[in-house]
Length: 231
Image 1 (spheres, one colour):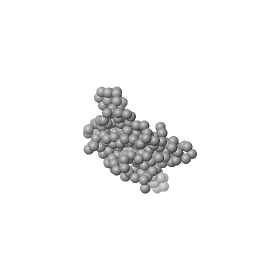
Image 2 (cartoon, rainbow, N blue to C red; image 1 turned 135 degrees about the vertical axis):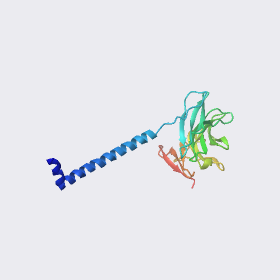
Image 3 (cartoon, rainbow, N blue to C red; image 1 turned 90 degrees about the horizontal axis):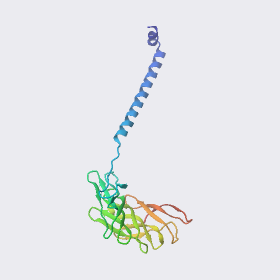
Image 4 (cartoon, one colour; image 1 turned 30 degrees about the vertical axis):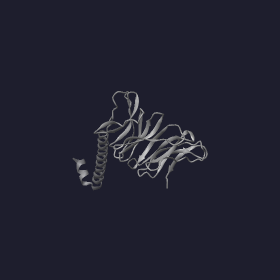
């Protein structure tokens, strides 16, 4: 009883005690709230398998995703051949098909709005970059002049009106970055070096199709990142 009376009549001791208890209570509540939030976030996160095509080894991989996360692209396997796919939660896996006289395709990138897909597809003599849209299906974009048939699309913007990637060209066995539009076709954009033995690849493009990003040889013979624009 004496101890209780002392706490009640000693204002300084009582206030300090109450503030300490209050501080501990607030800290405890904050810790509990943080732990509950973290647990809820962990419980809300999940993996969604996109599956694979029937008739081949189970080997699928995703390469890119639309800006809102609703469309995934990549490649699976059908009867021993690579098959480019488009996936949505509602429709599942969709085979994007092949080029004429070819068998095999890989999807590498999708436009931010999810309407256009690019990648690499096999034709009768090698590979070439392709563009896929719902209206046109898969169309070949060819390769740069003078090189062996080996090209691939790595970036797409504006619903498929601008595509970037890499192709072999007249410069030799190495790859040269390209920029493609329906009007101008495929043009090589060179490298950060004037040498004929260059290497460059355009790995991505801005959402509005203005800027191209990638890697290329430099004047000192090394390689480095670049940003390229036609303006």
